[in-house]
Length: 168
Image (cartoon, rainbow, N blue to C red; front, top):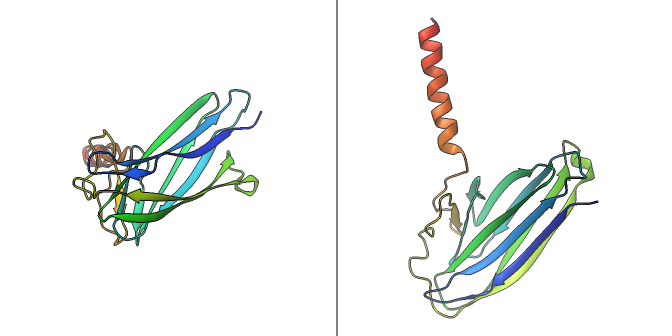
């Protein structure tokens, strides 16, 4: 049984009080004996900002990039919040690949190009929504990033440094 990968726009009309929303859903059935790896990117035009819970790893020049894995018997949903600065219609591009385990040659594409209508500019479009893990990028390449587990990596490096100093 193959994995399920769905990229769907949930809300494509942005108002002052309601952001756009896209879901990236990945299910890796327990019948599969290998972890599913996903490499995804979102490209946005100027004036559009995206924020995702557990998504962003890096971003610049209007693109945010993320990688993550889904072990067998698990599913993951990434919620991507879309905010707009100016009234009008803008197209957002979602693209990427997913593959089983370390076999990148057996990849499958993920792709969606979808228009978002900004009826009213979002409140605070350059601020991430109140989520536990958020990341965002705007078309100028600025934005806030907090990659999942980034704090744990910094803490681990600090503990490793303390261990090495004590060992000497």
